[in-house]
Each structure stands twice: as C-alpha cells, then as structure tokens.
Image 1: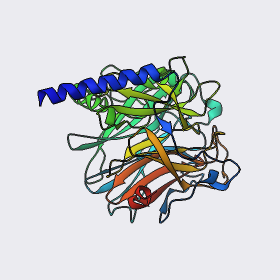
Image 2 (image 1 turned 30 degrees about the vertical axis):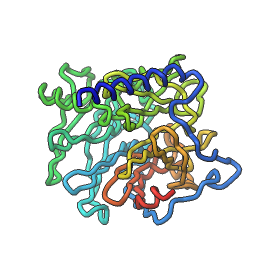
Image 3 (image 1 turned 120 degrees about the vertical axis):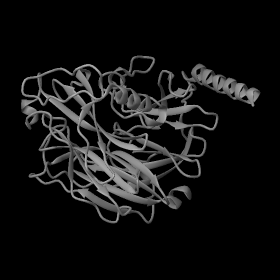
Image 4 (image 1 turned 45 degrees about the vertical axis):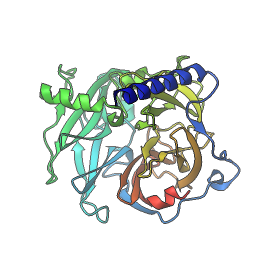
Length: 391
C-alpha cells in the first residue's frame, strides 16, 4: 500500500509538471466538441429534452428589480437557494441576500426570506462610492452537520472589490429559523458611520469554517479580501470567479476562471493542484469558450465532469449550455439548457440580457441549475440526469 501511494504521488507530480511545461502551447483543459456557429439558432447546438423550469423570483419594483449571483444546495431533505437583490442596481448600497427553500424536492417553494439584510442605506448607483458598503450572495457550506450561508462584503463602491471586508455567515436551522449574523474573521471590520455593526464570530468556529472552505471542493466563488482580485495568469492577465474544483482520476484538482482582462480573450483559464488545494498552478488559457460570465462545474454520478456556462464567442450571455467530459480534461459534447433570452424589463447599473451566473446541484436523478435572467428574475431548471449522460 505504501509503495502504491508513493507511485500515485509521483505520477501526479509528473502530470502536474508536464502540464506546466506544455502550457505555453497546449491548453490544459480542451474544448473538443463542435465549435459554436454564430449564424445558427442556439449556436448550432440542441436543447436538452424533458427539462422543467421554475420561476423562483419574478422581479417587481416593490421587491427589487435586480437579482443575480444565485446559489443552490441541499441539506436534510431541503433544497435551499439564495441570490443577491437590490431595488434597482447591481452591487449598489443596501444590496441584500434573499433565500427561498423547498421541503418537497422542488414541487413547492416557501415564501422569500431575507437571509442577509442590507448593511447600508438602500441607494442607487448614483449615490455609490467612498464610504458605502455592499454585499453579494456567496453560497452555502455544511460544516459538521450544520448548514451555513455566506455573503461577501466590500466597501467604497460596487466596483471597488479591492476594498473587501470579508464574509458574513449565519446558520440555517432544520426548522427554517436563522442564527445570528457574524463576521467570518477574527479582527474587527472597518467601522463606517451609519453602517450596521456586526459582531465577530467565535474564533474556534471561524477557524473551523475557514479550514473547511480552504479545501478545493469547498471554495466559495468570491474572496474580495484576497483571492478574487489577486488571481492573474503568467502574463498578468486579470481573472476572477473560479468554478468549483473537480478531481481527475489521478487525484489532481482542476478549476477554471473567468477572464476579465483587457482585452478580454473570451476563453477560460485553468489551474491545477496536486496537493489537495494547498498550492495551485498559475492559470493558463484554455480553448474553452468564455462568455465573460461566471461558470459552474460539477461531477455527475457516473463520474463525468460538466461545465455550465455561456458559450457565445462574442460574449453574449445567451445561450446557457452544458459541456461534458469523460476524463475532466476533454469536453467533447455540448447541449443547451436555455436560449432565446427575453428582453430586460427594467433599467439598472451593469444589467444585461441573458441566462447568467449558473450554479448547480446533483440531487437523485436530476441536475438542478439556478441562474438569473437579465439580472432581474431568478429561475431554476430541473434536468433529468439521463438526458445529460446520454449526450
């Protein structure tokens, strides 16, 4: 057994090293399916069959006409969803996080819950800037049989993500009630006049949750204090919003990033880890088409890896597609989840049409995909896994 472990470790290191030697010329993660054809409906790809779509949030002025950054998870026979919500504008002061849950496998849904209330006065983008605070939905984690929700907080304007203050967290109890809100940090956050003051979390619990979130399969999308604004490729090209990592058969972990560099390449960048996420390779450009939006990734019950993303080479966030790989490296099949996006109904900062920022959940025989529509509505599509596997 000891010799086997040593052999596997050496193979992983050799694989990692060889990838880094080659990555100047060969993408680490490959698109081997047919290329999108912008002259055809749906870029030339077919829609998956037997899907069912649910409207979780239908934007109205009284509740907020901006919704985005959705997440989904499952715990103790309940499906939980969350997303960012604002009266009008993206990442403006007073943005909050909403939650909706289902106790019957998605057949019916409970009323909306304000998971993380506004941290600042609710104002439009015209009053954003220095001294203002906002937050966005940043997902769930189950740590020692307790479900926690997270929001990511930053100051000084919606586009000032270098001014990250860290994460807020709270527990979600099995009866649907919510625990108190705490900072997931040990030192006090910046104090701003008129901004809600939130206590620090218990240091032992903060350490425990942070250790859990550092594992490659548990990383959250945003980390505005550190990771999100610091990731660059070997040429200094700015990247953000990594997918959840997936594991290859040899134990290597893989994740892909969105490209936000200037000029944007419209391709994803891939990073590898052979030491269970302690260190990651410098991201390198792949030929996976990047619609310039957050993508999502996961593993199906049969071991196939999927990526859900926008695949328009011109950067449109329509259609929303799923790409499949048997080995986690070569993505050779593609099908559509949604296409033909409706027009936006409301104005707002940074809003655009499309089926955007997907997040997913494998549950029983189905793949659930949550996404925003035009950064206004939030919808959830239930896909029979057999339809995906049989592509």
